[in-house]
Length: 108
Length: 110
Image (tube, helix red, strand yellow):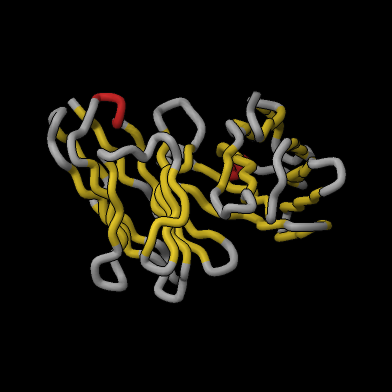
């Protein structure tokens, strides 16, 4: 069983839609990261969370430590948001454990 | 904005050859990592490095792999005798608080 599970695996949306990507984990963590990976392969860090909620522009990330669950929301989605979104948890030994990613496509 | 730099962006090598993947982490970062991503799979942890020594390594990081921080700025991953299954995208990362990733080296072993 994967230590970090994401859903859905694939997501298609129309421009302007509200999008939610979910992440559940089964290990103890010191922090959770949401990352974005574009087709060229590069990985960009969007958020690092250890509690509560963070917002950056149209992106919102929340975490519930008790339930071991996090969500990434995109408001007013745009075609340029199309990418793979990855949830990764930082273990107590400092390594990142990655989910399999959610492939998002936003159509105009 | 400071960034993690990796070279080369692509490396093609013959099976059994040695390769060195290079990384320049962000200058005030303290923790350094190598991860890899086999095509179509999730990113996997290889090794973490702090205070000039390995903090943790995965099962993948066997005796064929080694890391060095030779001069206080570069951070290298060496694979001594490459195998076909080493073909992957290799990412260097560094952090002080949040983590930053390099753009990756695509290694192809023929």
